[in-house]
Length: 228
Image (cartoon, rainbow, N blue to C red):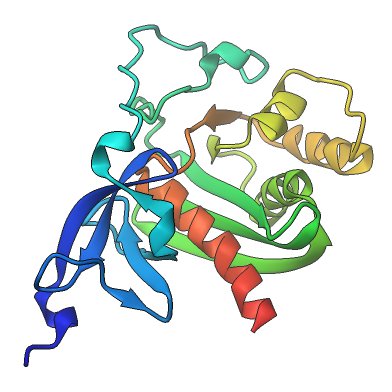
């Protein structure tokens, strides 16, 4: 009898209103191991996720992706219009740009939390996955950005931070007066002032953007490792 893993068969399904690929056996049935099914947002991606089979729905229940916007967002760091609202990422980034994908996650709100950071500079990549204790999801998102900025040694290079947290980006670029987490927000703003060219780019979470999925994986993995 053939090992079902060797078949490496997948079928299109819906998870949280997004289209995903779910692993199946040779007969096309969901391959359930320890009560979980392996899924991918893109078959070419390296990272995989395990979800409960009951959370997977037929493919036609996924919400269609929005059409790409034809407007050109501003490049000013304090102008929210420059952020992308869809899954399309700007490609006109500076050649020597440091790209950073950040994510924060908590199991419960508040609950055990972790942060994930992916740095990309040319062909070089670096990942950070760290458990930060019990806190809220918003604090985890902000902490990921703070740790990313603290990690950078070069402040003279252009930096682009990609995040799916509207809360964090609003606080850090629109100068909203924070009602909570004031000290953390002010610390991040102080760090931002050190950089000569720093912009945030809003991305849509769980929409198949590989680098953003990596950051999410790193954040959730930090929580899982601590809970083991």
